Length: 236
Image (cartoon, rainbow, N blue to C red; front, top):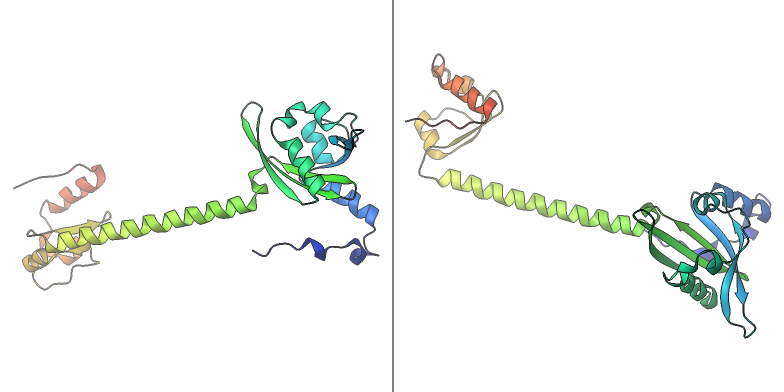
């Protein structure tokens, strides 16, 4: 999958169809992820000590139960963000000006995974977050590839076992046949069984058609009972 090139996007290329103000408001409103616009709070010694909330989009307001322009700061409203790594993630992203991602397991009633992305935008910080695993497409792709690899390995193992079992049947010093379905169709006939019935064609045929001389004998009732009940039948 090609990596998106952020340098290819420029509001100048979108004019005059999309004005910058309308585009910003529109994107915030139609986004299905929570978006926060934050600005840094500086101490007198030029140390970054907190972030103020500038704007929350509709999804963020619903998720956080806050107004569009809440009063308070990140640490004031969410002091636990200093312990769970979110505040350090915000600071690092803003100061280095390098976009980043952060995964958070947040304990509510059960542990809920949150996926955060952040990047500096001018003198503010743009944050997007979601509690949906679908947000991490890379994780889904890796899980899908792993599942497909397990499925291929299971199929290969099953085929190996089937081939091994068939070889045992074909080489066994006993007459063996495998019948399939309610009509008892021949799926496997080993050499000794074929030798018993002669050079007639059996594979792919119901036993009643392949061996009509058995009509009127109890063999068909016995086969039907075993197939329907799953109970083995033994006789001499």
